[in-house]
Length: 348
Image (cartoon, rainbow, N blue to C red; front, side, top):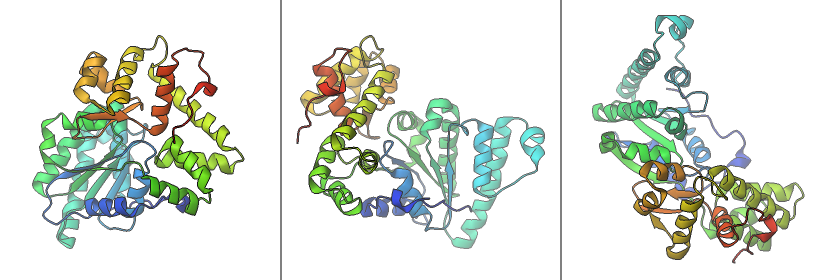
């Protein structure tokens, strides 16, 4: 089996003991476990960092990171083979097995052989971690279907356990809508840190003053990636007002790209959905689909980092505290000329 690469810079690691214990329980399943699992967390929650840190300390885990450059059957197969150190002859990739699907099948067959050997020697199934599968949901959903079907078959046969790692949105929605979900076991959500965890991280790990730490939390909540970005900007010489402008500007660009501003594709639907969340604290996915005009439109809107839906839950919320603040400003002042200075003061 291949090894899980550790975190390159320990400074990037935000230790969260509860989440790390839960990840370890997924990466070390019981010997008779017969399901595949899913770890879900939005971009910036630190899920990949935690998984790699925990997985690096365990054996019997094969880790494959799916990038935009490895979303075809052939390029994924190459990354997969590389992960478990299988190096077939060069002509395998470009001659002997020219069909992409055939290449994928042959690589999986070799992995099956290695998995059988591991299980015979260790008395337990190896674990295959497929990280960033949201890339497949966007670029090659058919390949994601194939991998899900293979994960189900492997669980049925007791050959290996697959753990899919993804952001909320397209990938979980696609996978939960298929019959292969019958073998889906645990779905772990890695969410934001709570208030105490975030303040402890800012004050004790990054030497931020208590007052500035409270200001940062009021702006971004416990989102790990945004907390780290805010501190990095402070360390570079920015004051909090400057950091606030930078982060709100980034969020506003997400809205613009998603078509939430004047004349955008999701302008009307997005504002209706936002107003519902402001009033009720959440919105059901069925109501989001209704307002969006169709399920496909609603799923597209859920993939744009404005709203988020946890797998196996019917409720939709704002993606981050920062996005909630940004959308509120857009709703309260819908003019396209709105500048950063018109954002409402952060409610503490």
